Length: 491
Image 1: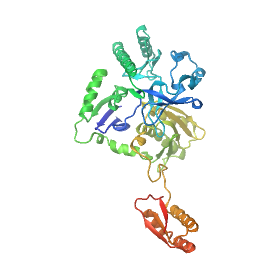
Image 2: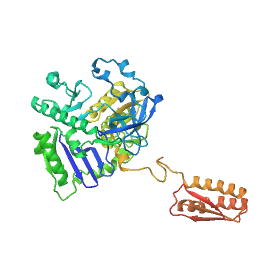
Image 3: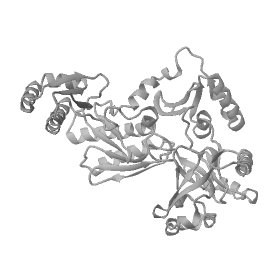
Image 4: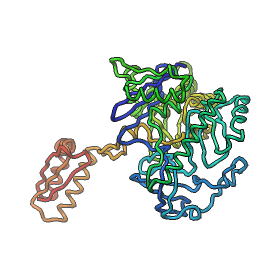
């Protein structure tokens, strides 16, 4: 598979696209005025302890207080948690025995503030690098599950179980597969030195305050996504190009020749129609090549994806048509999850299938399509209602939340009242006002659409009301009013 990374950087924002075989799969966005804080380490102050929730709110210097659950607080007994069974892991000490109001604490952000919620925190600090993740409070060695060869897992395990390495705990990342011992030792030495510097600096930081900031977006992409499968990385900004070159020289010199400075006349995101694909990713409806389509609805609680056959009628029978549509939808929705960066609970309503074998094949197609996703996902079997429940780890805002805001007309509901509905509300308000107050006449202020409806479709109703209340009614359009805004003025 031919895979490329395109980086478009300006002083205001940095955008990164991951393209596979000429098709956009992922978009990452970071704005200078509103950077994400996942991975950042803070010295915070406990502002509120909530025993009923087994959690506390921590002031880390952000607009909203951050949230820390008891399960995310490091405890000494978890130093060697390999032997801890599920029941022990679920039972946590009371939050009141772990934290007190006013207490200063070192925490790391694991989820950005999303919607009305503040950041999610942990005290179990992790420092990632190219090949490893350092866990300074632990001594456990973990190997990425994506490294499947047993001989390679054993080799890596032996390297990191040497006595000289047992000062900290480590997770060996997928990128470490087949990397020689010396390079892994260099990575380990870099992380150890970095943590000692962070730990020393934290002692002098005044709470609440920032202790350590994670890398910028383009460097995080190099650290987390750049692998041998990536054919090339093209960057259109000179300063970003220099930063990436310096980073890759230091940590991934074998891939240095794949970094290119893009100097073409066309904007870099025009190469694969990326701007159009981003625009489509903000739409509710996703068209499938067969004529079917998906409807993607993102809410605060979950994301729902509905599969429809649309114009696709198939060539054999109804069951075969449904099966083919569901197969195509499974691949398409896996791409949409990555492209839109949808996280949390996702419910997929596939078209009802009768055959168990068809259900299994659709589910396997979905799981296979998700294999290339860098974000952890879990998929359940097809339920009795034909629904597939899945979760996708959510750490940052979705593309929609980053680029859009709730509609001022409908306040994010996705619909507005019709002009006729508003007319009837106006009639009720006119009747109420005429009975409650002694007035000479009544003035209605409303949007142009509503005024036109009152003068056209509802003209007879308006005349009957005017006669019934015995007061003249005057209408005045207001260009700044939304369709569901109106005022009745007593004159």
